[in-house]
Image 1 (cartoon, rainbow, N blue to C red):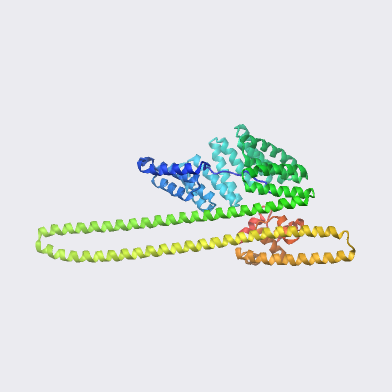
Image 2 (image 1 turned 90 degrees about the horizontal axis):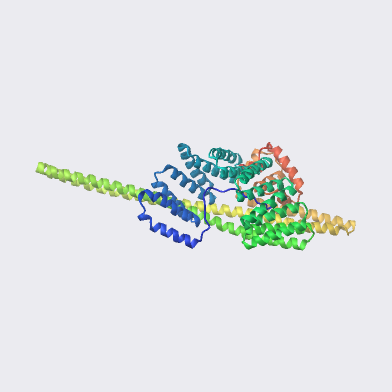
Length: 566
């Protein structure tokens, strides 16, 4: 299913202002920098960073934020800036760097007992742990954030945190998630948070949908839809309409589902929302399949495939841009370090020149006192000075060579790391693409086999036996071919997975090892069934047997467990 949850937001505001106007604003701010008083420059650099953030120029945004931190004397102001930098790294999916800056801000906030920033930073860290599927940590930080928001009597913040906690429990405990979403809804109604109310209605509807209570889910989706129309949010309207269509599809109300999906598709096309367009296509395909209109079902399935390919290409381009931005950030940091080293060397040279001048003055004074002693002293001192200058020059050359060598080494390492990351990302995309292609191909094959089975009903017994033999042989050969090809790609991306798994759990059967590989890719039961030509119930049975062999309790998520292996 392609239902969507309205998740969360970091406390960083990014505007959708016209980019040309924003560039003009940045130029004006930069031009005014020299005329800004020293005690206001920190906030001025922050404004420049904010302006760059709005146009998604994260490299320059971070650079100006760091300048703001460097010259600021306001500790709370520094905490706020670090929180913003952490937020930028979050949007760039660099969660390690995001956590690093959030933790720095968190420590300083605790030292100052800054409850406002504490509530915000704890919430942000909780969201990152949720994004990285560390649900327990996410819940821990979000609960801490909730305590501070209650202390501050921040009703909007409390409602948002209840909503975020509901999201954290969504994959773990649907009943608990529902309870938290309803708490958020209750508060949002009291404070007349119209957008938040619509979000809560949608999230509650999703819980009921997951619990197969589709009638109740539709009631909440309809309530959410009314709110979205009031707030004039076309994207959310398209999502909610398709959510209703999905619930109607489960109730086998195919005509109504088709009607809602078309409405969703029309709005999504109007705003060029590719993901929502793809969702509408796949719902229409399933709905027409339910009415036995296979022509339209196939038509919308092809449209869905074409749209998802476009989405994949768009995401790939964004990922490349993010990698390039991170590279530029690292490069600038290295340049700053080298500049600091050069400044230190210049300071040392200046000190050496000053010392030389002091000795020269002392020589002149000694010359006045005792002429002969001074002449002898000057000869020795000039000789020593020349030696020192030669040594200093040699040391400087050696130091410069070391710096240049280190710089080349760092650049080489960065290029190698980038190449490795790009190769791994490409292999991951190939593996995912191959898995999806196998699923779609096998679904098509299964449809053909179903049509053959229908033909068998009007065929004599001998012919039926021959057809069954052919089908069985094809499934076996196709399954083996798909698996060998898939296995090669999988081992390239996850090289140690099979080795670690079989060493630790030697009693696993080949079928269970295959299942582990599919689950490692986070494939659903339905997708695994399509690849292996087995029924979803068979896959579920194999999963239960696998959990027993792995000695997993019900609290442990099987996919998360396998992800930690390799």
